[in-house]
Image (cartoon, rainbow, N blue to C red):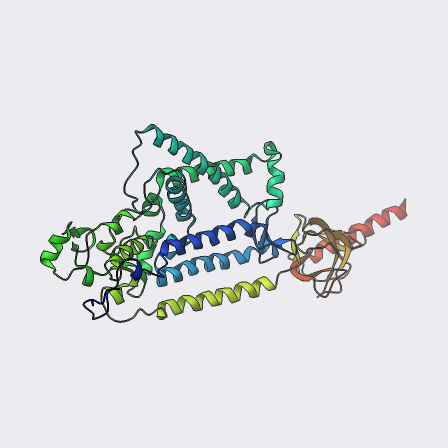
Length: 496
């Protein structure tokens, strides 16, 4: 080991000794890709009490979340799930930049599988993963054949990825049963074919241009960044100013190290272009923050190898503008913005689980029919309703109901409880009747508020819902007229 010291008075070490124990970010990213892929693939198969961890079932019109099945009428949880998603991404961006893009995004994972594994490692179409700017010579027949094989391999993987995506909307147990009769499920087949074609075009032909020009996230990130946001960042104080200016006016000054050293003798950048060659979005990180950067940190790995051979730390680091550019001290991960995000996330999580824990095991919609009322021959008044029951519990129940705030109104139909299977629905015509004078208004019909309590006969304590409705009582003159008509009919009968 060399005993020479660097400018900071620290001993220099070179080559393998300096990089001993170093784990490239690319290796860590591959592990994160593997974990994300495994979770994304097996999650649709995991069930709790017969319900999936997450499933937005369009066929059965249900949402499965954390092993609990919610009917479509209970989708008040969806806004909380969306808030959780967006707040989580915003918090992640404020702390770690576009870490989502480089470490978890399916688009990036698919591109790495296709470009780095299939084309480079498996088929040797590209010479090195470390040079993503050098394109293969496609005039050679062997390269054309390799390209065709790569497309075929990715096409098969695209179908698998499309099927996995659909498992979040069609349960896997139903998915394969539907595919056994594709003619009866052409919508499902169409989605799989469409998604597969999109993935083929996106990954093979659009490439990272999707991240640069199509994905809106790159435009949002600039609003979320601040001086403490960590990202792949070049240290111009050590490496030297390679570019001059700001924004689109930045101009490259030096292509060769000797030109840079002539102006900045202490500049450590070797102008080897390793950080540029390895970039999947084709940017020069030495230019500063750019919308195209996805925080994959491949430029950090490239510079670490080059500078490590010289016994120096990397010029490109996963750091913040405050710490590296402004040199105003250490990065503050917990600051007002990020604390605010975490508080908001906590409140949304509490609300989500609080509302999810109050799931109703029975849903009921009460609607009056178009006929307001019916005056009976004996002077009684009837109102008709349509009750739509939904048993959202995991087992069948028998249901009935009662009027709880008016003992003068009775239920005359149905006369007995009825049974509904687990997850099933039933429509029932319900007739309420009264023989009492509920209102005495000769000018207009009078709506009488009623509360209808429906319950499971076999579990009334836990499965009970109240619904508000109205019982329309006719004008008093209509009832008097009806009674007078009856008396006239009776008189005529006696005369005969």
